Length: 295
Image 1 (cartoon, helix red, strand yellow):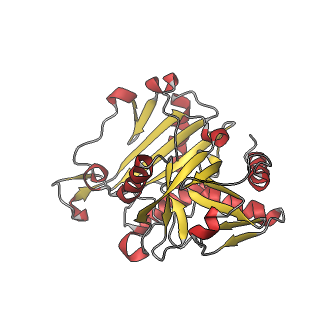
Image 2: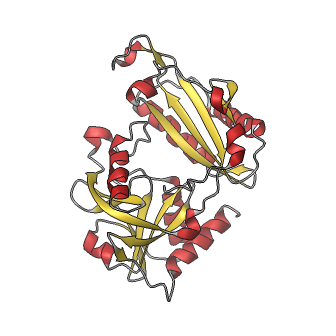
Image 3: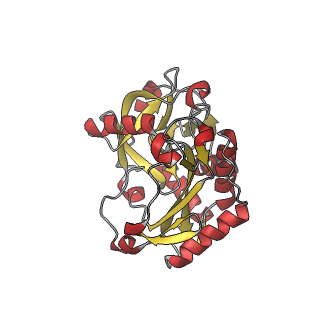
C-alpha cells in the first residue's frame, strides 16, 4: 500500500511489544538469530483501529493462526491472549483511533544460523502499533504492470501472509522505477491478479470484477467489499480477466486494511475513468464501507 512518507511525530515515542514486555522505539530489539530476520520465517497480520475498535479482529486472528499452522509454527498463545496483548499495547500508546498495528510471529531464535526449522527455539511475538492516517484514500494512486507474478501454491502459496515478501518488494521496486506508486501483478497464466500489497478491482459495464482469488492474498477488506456488493445489488464477479479489460475499464480501485478502498487513477500510463463524471461505483462502495466500520 502506498504510504505517506511524512513522519508522524507521535510515532517517535511509541512503545513496542516484544514477547510480553514493552520497549521504547529506539530500544526495541530482536536477536540477529531470529528466524524472521535470518530467513523471513514467520507470519504477520496488519489491523486497523477505528473509534476504539480493532476492525474485523477475529477474522485477522483466524488468518494469523491458519498461517502459523500451515508453516508449522506453534504459537503457544490463545487468541484471547493475543487480544490482551493488542489491548495492552494500545493502552501503553494511548491510542483510540486512526492507528495501525502489525502483529508478527516468527519461529523464534536459532541456535545456529541455518535453514533447518528444528534449530529454532520457541517463537518471537512483536506488535508495532503506530498512529496512521490513510491519506491515499483521497489522493488516488498510479499502477504499473510488472513482470513479477504471484506464483502457484506449490512454490510459495500467495495466500500465506509470510515474512518472505521479496517477490512483492521486487515488483514494487520495478513499479517505482517506472514512475508508479504500486505494482500490478499478473497470475501465472497472464490474468490480472493483485498489486504487490493490495487486492485489485475494476468496474466494467457497471459490474465489479476482481481476480478469482486463487493466486493472491484473500484480504479481509476484499472479502468485505465482495459482501457489500452482494448485499447492495451491485453485480460482482470473481473471474479471470486481462489487461485489455483493465485498460478499457470505467473505474479501478485497490483494497487493504489501512487504505480501505483507494482509487486507481492510471495503469501503465492510461487514465482510468472520467474525472468529469467521477467514479460512482467506487464512491458508493467507499461510502458503504465507511458505514460498515463506522467512520
